[in-house]
Every structure is written in structure tokens, then in C-alpha cells.
Length: 277
Image: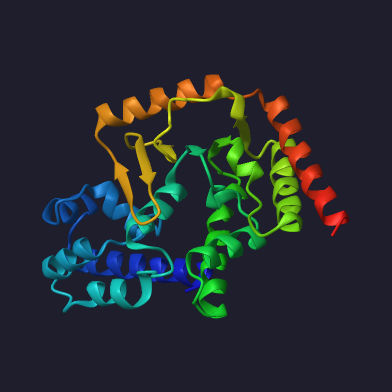
């Protein structure tokens, strides 16, 4: 489902929820209490800010006696299988975040990938799939990047390990395009990118990738991922430890100016490769 049609489905869900709630004579707070969420959460559904959740939709059907309409809307119109189940929640949280901080040890974050880079990553992990499958995955990844183009975009901080710059994903020409794209975002001050160079050696996040998200009206979260699964962490103590590790890593990284120079130097190395082939 394209981004526009998915948003339209959320809006339809929200409009129907408001209509049925008001017909039942319930406020947002009253309905929220009966389905075990806050009234503000119901309001976010009605305003199409949050993706409707299937379990909550089922409870709403029961309270409003709507014969399963909201459950069916979730199943048929809203649930998007372009993302792995463990990652779908992260996509929705990114839309609500006021600040996102990421560490990428081996692969560029999806929010920074170009189409060629995303295609190469997808095919490497799924060598026997159809072109349609690849196109769907690449399109979904690029659509996530819309949050960086919005007027209300979050602050986006990224720490890359030098591994990411030196691994020729998609080949030299794809890497030239990819690194020039990141450099452009840095110059536009759309993102804040720094690089941990090889010479640093051991660092505070040897365990792998990390994403931290902050929100206006909710506690911060952490997200970690392996090749086959991901975990959203909301335990305050664990999130605090993750934030401290990120701060330590930030202290080990090059300055933004030096990071930009390294990224541009890596792009030039790849450019020389393309000119000799």
C-alpha cells in the first residue's frame, strides 16, 4: 500500500471511530478507559496520527458494538506487510519522534539509503526474490525518509562506523552516489553525521546497531536489531544505559567537519575506481 493510500486508510479509520464514538455518547477519555488506553491515544487514532492497533481495534468493536468493522479495517486496509512485524512499530514511532539518534556499524540506516544502495542490500539478503519484491522493499524504505523532508522533521543524529564507508554496497558507482547524497544532507544541515574511524578500535557499542528515539509526550525508547529480529526497549534503566553508550561513542567519533571530509574522501576513492573500469 502506498504511503498516501495508507494515510487515507488511517484517516478513514479515525473518522469512523469518531462517528461511532459520538453516536455512543462517549468522550475520548471514556472510550479510552473502556479499552485500556488513554483518551489522548484515542484522539491520536481519530486524527490519523498513530497507526491503529489490531488488539485495540477489536476491543473498540466490542465496546461500540460495531460488528467487527474496526478489526476488519486494520486487517484489510492498514496492516502493511512491506515491513517485518518486528520493525513495523519502529516505522510508526519514527513518525512521532522529535529526535532520532542512530549508530550504524556495518550498513547505512534506512533513513539515509539511496535507491541503488537499498536495492543492493535487499538483493544480498534475498537473492531469489522477484523484481517486484525488491521494488516494494526499496519503495517502502525510501518512503520512510519522508519524515526528514517534513517541516516538523525530527532532529536526526547518526554515528557511522568507517566500515559503512568502506564496504562497496552496490559497487563503486552506487557508493559514489550514496556518499555524495549523505554529504549533501550534511551540508544542508538536515542530518548530523559523524564517523568512528578504524583507529578508534574498541568502542562503547561493539554489540551492534542502536536507535534512540525521543518524543514530546512519551518516554524515550531504544531499538536494537540483528539480521533476523529487532527489539524495542522501553525499560527506563536500559534506555538510560543505551543513551550513555551512545554518548560515549559520540565522544570517540570524529568532528562533523572531519567526518564530512572522510565521507568525501571515500566517495573520491570510489570515483577513481569507476574511472579505471
